[in-house]
Structures are given as structure tokens and as C-alpha cells.
Length: 285
Image (cartoon, rainbow, N blue to C red; front, side):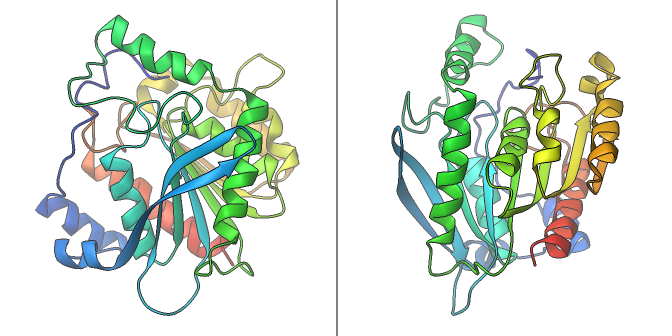
């Protein structure tokens, strides 16, 4: 989970490569850079919560119509350009997307700048402190508030279900969201999620029976090496709860889905995105 040696460079703002767009085409989500930028509306918004005001970014397709909603939970580095890019790309595929700053109680986004070095213990301590300040109850309240905010948008088709996806720490937050709003969340995507199965009574996997969602759990190979039993615990929990789920170990390192990460794996990231696209197409109905 958030290994010390894999996040160097994560705050970079990379541009999509030609190969990325080729892979996007294969995944059914191709767009040229100009079309990519112009296909959606982007708005910085503030979401009133029980604990304050959360800064966030909202995306939705241009033109008339309504679309299913999706909530994106970031990794431990928070809301920054690469997650704005993800939100924009997802909206271009036909969704209303909210990407909140998960650390809004402590600091407005961005919570780190380009000088941040994850390899330094004192730097890591800063973001870990932000995560430690988040409580389960607060996350659950936020999840319900964010989904309600999405549902209140005129662009959202509230007759269709909502999706949630998360990266690193966002994986367990996505599980919690599905349990907090079981009547709305129908699809969950976790990508190199950390701490999905623990021995604690608040382990995210114990929430599975409370949800009404289908799951895509993409596991990093180094996370699986450290905790090889986790995937089996998840599979057993999904089976016992009779939930549709894909749990797969990808041949890529923790952080592989986030462009700008030192371990970003373009091919594996695009395959994970394609699987997420299929999940949303099947379940957000």
C-alpha cells in the first residue's frame, strides 16, 4: 500500500502520448487531444458537507442530455492535474463526474506541489497525516453528500445508477461509498487499492454484504506479493455475499494506473480503463 519507492514524480502533469491515444482507440474511448479537451464542461465547484466545504471539480459532456454519474476518489496525493484528466476522460465517455479533494478538512487542493518528493520520509509524513485525519464516519458522510451533489446536477440521469472508482487509498473509500449509498452505487472500481482486507473490524471487505454493486478490483503485483491472501479473502467475501466481482492481479506495480507515477504502465492502465468502461456500461443502467 503506497510503497515508499513508487510515487516519485507522481505530481507531474504529463500529456497523453500518441501511444496512449492508440490504446484508447482499442479500448473504445479514442479522441484527439483537441476533441478530448472540448468534449466536456469542466467546473471547479464547492460542495457543502456536514464538516465544511469541499473543493472539487465537476465534469459533464457538452450538449443536451443527461448521463449517469461517477465519483472518483484520488490516491494519497490528492486532487491534481492527472485526476482532473481522468475526470475529463470519463465525462467524455458519457458521464457526469465529480472529483473531490478528499483532504478538504485539512487543506485545499493541491495538497502538494511540484517540489514534493515522496521518497523523503518527512514529505510522506505530510500526506499520511492528511489521510490519518480522515475518519470512517466522515468518509461515509462525504460519500453520501457527494452522491447527492451529483444527483442534484441537471445533467445527471438519476434514473440510472452511480459508479465509484478509487486509486490506492481511494480503493477502500470506494468500498465505503458503496456501503454508504447502497441504493445508488451499482459499480465499484478499485485500482491498486491499499488496505482492502485487514484484520480490523472496520476492514473495507466486511462492508461488501451491505452493498448492491458489482466490483472490479485490479491488484498490483507487488501488493499481491506482500499480501497474497488478500485476493482470496476478497473473492470469498464477494462469493459469500453473492456479488458480481472481478479480482485480478495485474503484472504492474502499485500506482501503475496514474500517469506521472514512476511506475505508470500505459498498456496495463489502458486495459484496466477498458475493463472499467465495460463495468460502467453494463451496470450504470
